[in-house]
View: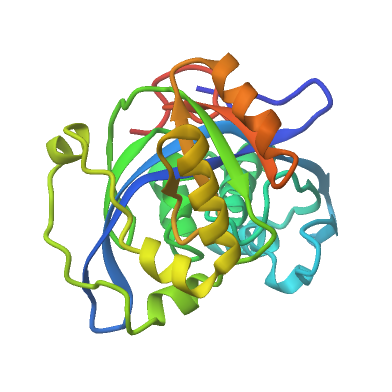
Length: 287
């Protein structure tokens, strides 16, 4: 299956939601063991690539406040060159749509799209599992974006089982705060020994996020948005370590009505849940 390239040449890097997140342990190296469900939404960053013949990796535009050497798209391109010995280069422009520090996985998604795009543009022919392995060396969320399927995830997020949860409409609020994932996972109040559950438990309604209490305590702006959404939508959840919060709706119209009210106070948008990443054209990729 080939990725979609937009008519303007953009490669899409979609957001993700964590529909649940449990912290079930901690490895000796300090990484936390998780259980989570990843689902994509059709809100995307847009990446543009121009192949170079001089071997240089240049990020011409990208995430505000992120230096090129720290940007995951640059690191992904460099990792791919190192893995394959490819001598080609690339110029990358990133049109950021997704909020940073919001738990939507924008940086990881940008890196995954870079790996998928350059595998094609540089004619490398790497298998999907190899791209995911390279991605994992850069960030635990990158493999799910590379595989392109909604998934039940375990380990640090790298053990993926494709699944097909419902694809509702989501209202997503992005408080004006960037949450530090490192801070959340180092907080002494974080639950680190939740009981492991099964996929069937999620399907039956287990949608808790173990990071929620820490984030609401540490970030009043997230707590305010969470309370507002729960009041107006009847439910609210945190994605990842936040700070974005979301609620699901069975129809777009209702979601847009609540979004219109929310937009008077918050950065808010409505997006559709997608079990197949918007980056890819037809089912069958990865898995």
